[in-house]
Image (cartoon, rainbow, N blue to C red; front, side, top):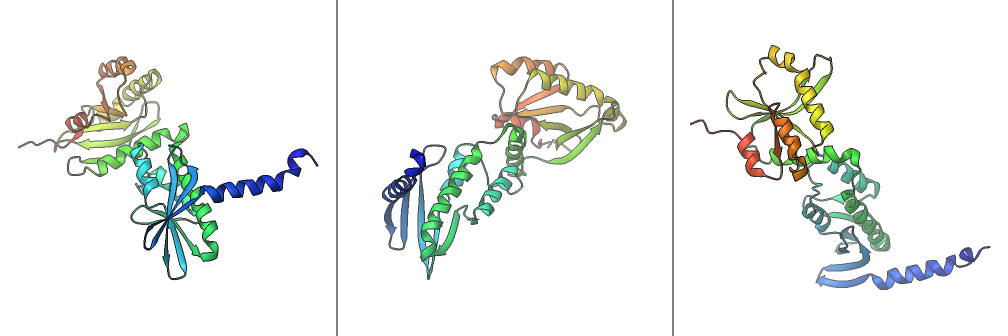
Length: 269
């Protein structure tokens, strides 16, 4: 038996003792018990939970803090049509936790289950918070979710269709994220990208050239092409100029004034 193996029992005892001493229990009200755990989320904030009792059952909840904090950090998990929401629900199902209408994450059990419920929900909160670390292959879909959530919440100002594609002379199909109707007669094609680079500029110009005959045959040759990116950095302005020379406009998503000026419904009265 090596040295570490001989210490396994004492290490486990020390760890359990640390957790026991580090979990702080305080009455928040006459019927609410707060648990301040020794664990933190990815932002360095301590994970605190609230316990309430209903007859013989105890519910442990984060009081909605986790999703609220993630939203403050720029990660909105509440849009039910988004990729992020699907990831959230997957984490909750895996841990047998639930999401309430007021965005609280919780678990319920009887008195004998309560220590396990507290431990399980703590781990669930950590896993949900870790959704801020999304891999690069999901980056575009995440930004597209943010754009979609914004426009869906502003339907009084924007009129749009989704799900169109165009056929190129190369026989390739190119998806168009949005068609915005700014007046009865005026429309704009819009695609969403997470970043603007030399490779994307070349690709966009190629797509626009490849689809010219398709657009002419469908009487769409005068519909302008726009792309939305998170913001225009100083290093990207040369790419914006290159696209502008081919009548492709770049719209920074962080500037809602430009978003409305370019894409909102125009008052034609």
